[in-house]
Length: 341
Image 1 (spheres, rainbow, N blue to C red):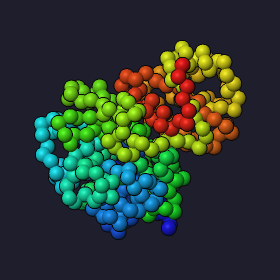
Image 2: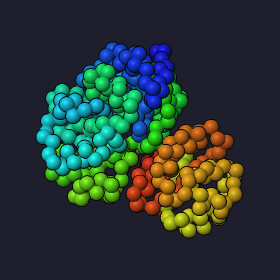
Image 3: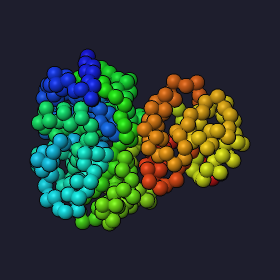
Image 4: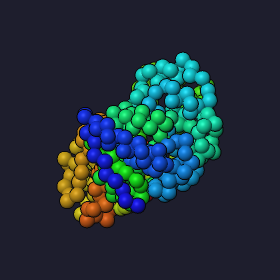
């Protein structure tokens, strides 16, 4: 399959380019589109044929449900089978559009392929002008998981999508780098207990500013608990080199790293550690508390590591406050080993 490249300037959107992309959607094809979180692989959420193409292109397990993207509340209501109570409406008002996926009881219009046969579906409204323009042009909700081969680091640039999916999908919309750089936070609102199923671009602290009763799902706290979201059981975000996650406070991390050779190892860490060490392959993710900067660059660095002349990767942990919890979550899932100091 020839993959068509569609360049679009998000500050001056070409309507003809959006129409071209929407034609692929209506033809039951997949189109990679930019969002503020990561690039998504979009297809018509009403079409089983289109949804099947997402799974085939990504090599994604069929029991890993897809997140559906909408452009307004009218489209949302077609996808769900539950009322929007005051708690939900307050969260939507505060964080939509944005990096928050809400899990609802699904309507009969949502294919079992989208929901992996679950009675629920995850839905969000992306905060990106191109993604919203494409949804409005197609007038259908778009299922859109990350536009990468399953298990690989998520794509934050159009070039990342090209590396993984060229020849496997109909088109790629080429635009700027994703601003958030990490997937959305997934919050289950299908019952009275609102629980985070996946850590993401919104921290639990920010969510609790709007709804103080939000909790983490037990599976995010206890590894022995089966996750409600099937995709959480799979390995994600992994570079091609084996990666070790070093868990401990900054001083202990630094003391440990001073005792080992970094000659053939890529160290991904923070300024406070990198500045105290010497080695041929060291990359900083900024200062220890600049979580947004680190998230924005993390997946790009993991992809770059594939082409570096190193045999392994070391990454250091963050504090669990704010988006540090999301950083640790992604680093753990991308790692093959863990060292606890």
